[in-house]
Image (cartoon, rainbow, N blue to C red; front, side):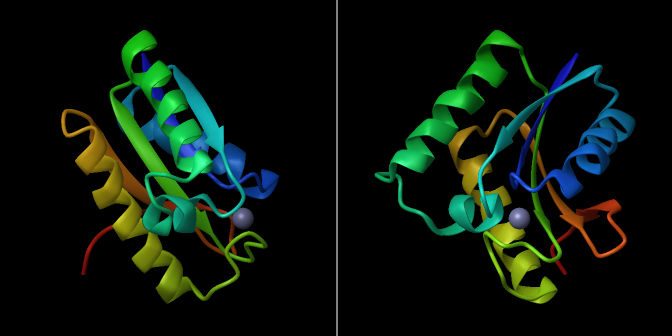
Length: 126
Ligand SMILES: [Zn+2]
C-alpha cells in the first residue's frame, strides 16, 4: 500500500509527485523524503556523506517497515538546490535511479521529472 518519493524540499513539486506515484503504482500512501536538490544528492554525493546515510535510513524504514513497493526519485524545474538545466537534471535523475537500484535491487525505482508546467512525468533513458 506504500510507495516512496525522494524529492526536493520545494513544495511546488510535492503534490504532483505524490499523485504520480498513487496513480501509476496503485499505492494508497506515499512516504516523502525531501532534500534540497535531491536528484543531484542521490546521483553524486558519496556514501560517506551524512545526507546519504540519513537518506538510506529513511528509505529502509519505508522499505522494511512500510513494505514500499516503488521508490521514485524526482528532479524539477527552477530548482534552487540543484540549479541546472532540464537536460542535466534528467542525467542526474537517471544516475540517481541507478544508484538507488544498486542499494535496493529488489525494489522498483522510477525517475520523475517535474517541469515548468508542474506536472510529474516519468524519466526514461534515451
Ligand atoms: Zn528543488
